[in-house]
Length: 179
Ligand code: CUA
Picture 1 (cartoon, helix red, strand yellow):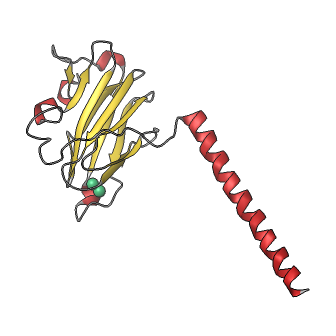
Picture 2 (cartoon, rainbow, N blue to C red; picture 1 turned 90 degrees about the horizontal axis):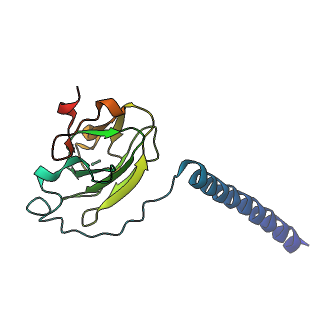
């Protein structure tokens, strides 16, 4: 008799857990389909010890770059305790790819009000492709505890209307070039 009561209680909790898991799966599927919220899955390695010496992530190559097809690539380095560069201009309504890596420890970032959210793992390049519709400044804080200066680590993603997006002759755009 006692055993039956225990079995019934266990079954009740199995149902509760199944409902909770089911709800979470529904939330994940819904946000994936409606807001393009999903974990970044780019597995691309890079040597964190030399990324500032040569290749894609040298200082001169950081920042926003317009590609030949009109899309924009933004390259930045997340390091203790800053994003380089700190101000990231992007055009509204165009495909933008963010490419980020770290030379030291684990960092991460979100862009407020958008679906951009990723970890930045040393040794890997985090890549997110998205489109920004709301013009204006979006705060971009580091969201992985990375040391004593963690709370001071943030950047600004500046979404510009098309008429304010005027890159130089090399296709590079910085916040200094905003009219
Ligand atoms: Cu970088 Cu927290």
